[in-house]
Length: 584
Image 1 (cartoon, rainbow, N blue to C red):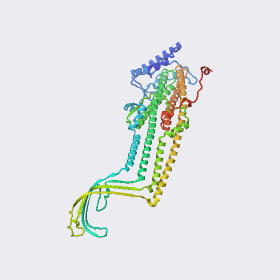
Image 2: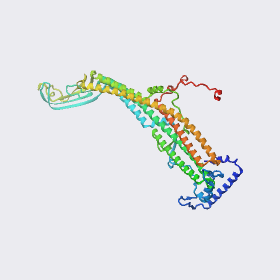
Image 3: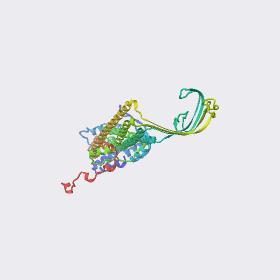
Image 4: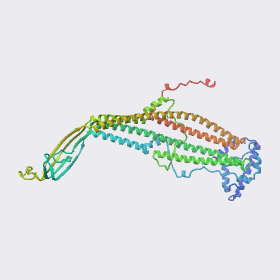
C-alpha cells in the first residue's frame, strides 16, 4: 500500500480537537522511544514470556524504514468500552517492552509463488485461442483427417465403374503326362511364353488375368458410391461437432483464466485492506492505546490473506496450463488474458422464446445433421440388400499380347506321328487377343442369406432413427437447461452487484469509524470478509453467466447472427415514462 493510501485516513482527522492532537504527539514520542530501544538492542534476540515464540528484531535502519512505510498516523486515545473491557487498564498493566515483543510488526511484501518467477509470460485473447484450435488442437485435426479418409473412400467407390489394367507376362513349362479331352494320355514336354496386356495365358484357354477388366456387381457399385457420400457428409458434420465442443472447452478455459487473474486481484486487494488494519492495530497496541488481541487477530487475518493470494496465483498457473493444453501450446508458458476485467458478455440476445430456440437448434445442431446422414446411409444399405439378388455380377476382360512356344511332339518330322508338324522346338511367336464377358446372378444360401441381410439392414435403420430421437431429446434438454442458466445467472448478477455495493459501503463506514475511534478493528475485519465474499460471488456470477452464454450458443449449434436477430415488432412494448411520472 502506498504512503498516500496510508495517510489518506489521517487527512480526515486534521480537524480533530487540539486535545486529541496533543495525544497524537505523545503517541509519536512513545513510538520514537520504542524505535530507539529497538535500535539499541538490534541483533540481540528478545525472549518473550514463557510459552510464546521468540522474535528477533531487525536492524535500526530496517526498523526505521519499516515504521516509515507501514505505521499509520499516530493513533488517538481510545476510550474504554463496555464491550472491550478495561482497555486502558490492560495497556497500563502490561510492560511496554513485552507488548512490543508480542506484536507482529514485520509486514510482509507481496507473496508470490516461486514457480511463477521461472515461467515465461505470454498474453492471449479469446479470438487468438479460437484461431489456434484449427492449427494445433489434436482432437479437431483428427476429425479433419477422418473427413479426408471419407473423401478418399468416396473417390474409390466412384472409380469402381472404371476398368482395371493389368500388364504382365507368364512362362509355362510342362514335362510329363497330360490328358486330352477324349481321355487319351500323352507324355509330352512343352513350353510357352506370353507377353502383353494380361497374364496367365496357358494352353488353349483364355487369358485368366485379362489386360483390361471390369469385375463388379451393378447394384453394389452404385449403392456403395451413394453410401460413401453419406459417410462423407456425416464426417463433415462431425468436424463441426468437434469444433463446437472444443470451442466451448477453450472458451470455458479462457474464462477460467480470466477468473483466476481477477481472483488474484481481488485477493490481493483484500490482503492490502487487511494489511492496513494490521498496521493500524499494531501501531495502537505498540503505544498502549489498543488491545494486543486486536493486533494479533489482524496479523492472523493477514496471514490467511497471504495464503489466499498464493492459492490464487496457483489457480492462474493451473488455468493457464489447461488452456495451453487445449490450443496446443507449451504448458511451460504462463498465459495471461488480455481482458483486464471480467465483464458480462451477451451472445444470444433476449428475448427469444424457448420454442424458437428449440427450432434453431433442430436446424443448426451438427449432431442432428450427422445422424440424418447416418439414417440416409442405413436406408441406402437396406435398398442395396433388397436389390442385390436381382443385380448381376459382370466380368468383362480384354487381353492382347504375343504368345509362342512349342513341344517335343510337334517338333518331330511330318508323318512320324499324328502330332508331328515339323515346327520349331521353341518359337512360332505371334499376336493374340482375347475378349471375354461373364455375367451371373447370386442367391446367397438359397435366399436365406439375402433375407437375413435385409432384416439386419432394416434393424440398423430403426436403430439410427431411435438414435436420432435420443440426440434430439438431448439437444432439447441442453437448450432448455442453458436458457434457464442464462436467465438465472443474469438475475444473480444483479443481486451480486448490489451485494458488492452494500458491502463496500459498509466496509468503508466501518473503516472510517475505526479511524475515528468509534468502532472496533474486528468490525472492519468482518466487513472486509463480507466485501471479499461479495466480490468473489460477483466474479463467479459474471464468469458463470458468460459460460452459460457460450453453452447456450453451443447448444443452438452456433447459428448465424441473422437467425438470432429479432425485429423491433417482435420485441416487447415498453411504455415511455415522462419526467413527471418519474417524480410521482
